[in-house]
Length: 216
Image (cartoon, rainbow, N blue to C red; front, side):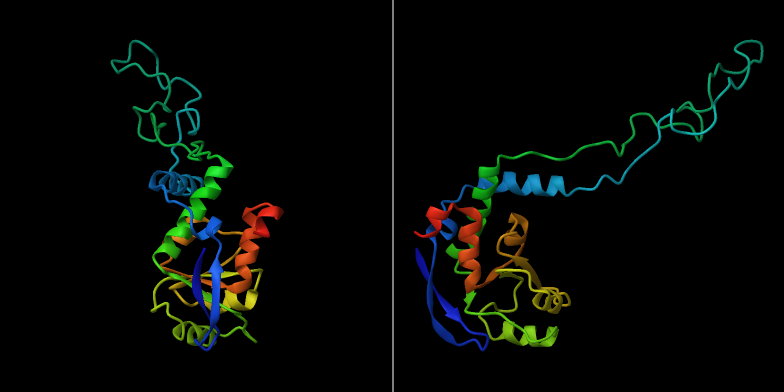
């Protein structure tokens, strides 16, 4: 385990805490992390582009003209891709599925690798408590400015749902909030710093490990 400084909301040093090695000391495999990132991006991808095939467009219930004797080319339907307003051949369809699967243990391990990477770079900041009396963006911003996150993009990890913190952070473009038991790898990697409420560390251990492992 590695020790990090614990700050209060005034930015003062109030002690230190050990980061559990099974969460913040995992050996990093770039290939596994990349696989987890690609999976999450693929699963969140929305299918927007969609074209209609010849069976989807309107009209074409009858042959436009006789097969022979008109001097014109032979056609069977105005829905043919050869006609303006006809169907599209091999166009993109909303039926496409971009989702990717990944082993649950591998997905968890990749997340722990991302957390470990931030700890290794000394970009994990722990606060003893993070509470606001009311929804106030300015108050939250003042707290963050007193902490060593250097106005960088920050992921605030809280132990449980806190609408006051979440709504206060909504107008801060460099700040994102997340519950300790609902982390995802993209949030961790997109943030330069992790601001973790002290109680969130225990919540993370309970979420990602068995009960007997939490006591260690």
